[in-house]
Length: 168
Image 1 (cartoon, rainbow, N blue to C red):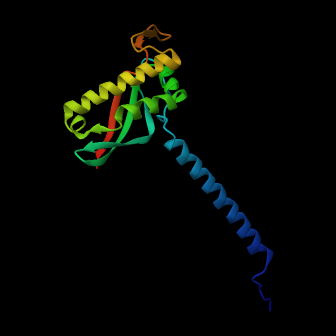
Image 2: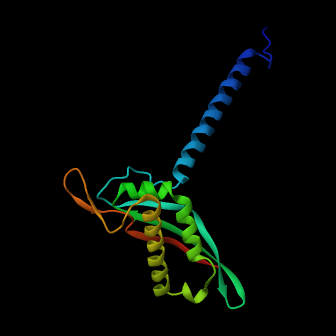
């Protein structure tokens, strides 16, 4: 009669292999989730068609409501027909975020509550981003460029989109 021991090398080898598989799976999952959360659009950026870039993390600023302080959270996507502008936004993320934080911070609640007020804020944000790109990357939103097949498209950032707007 043969007695099996729990300390056989087969179980230990199986456990080691299983540990390696689990470790590799965890590395793969964490790498994949980092890539999807890092702010890129997920697809290739091409000139002459709408390209989107998410500014992350969300902007959280104080707003004034009478004698009370409240918070406003904004998630913002940018749209451009120009791949160079998308790259410039990524390259000059810090000054763009700085300008937007200065624009959004310490506003009165009456400046952000209505649709017209939010549209005005959106236009101001677009202007700040365009000014920053001219200053740091020499990208002008009033210009045009041409694709290899002769299609003309505008340069710079064309739209600021508020994808989440929360006031607490």
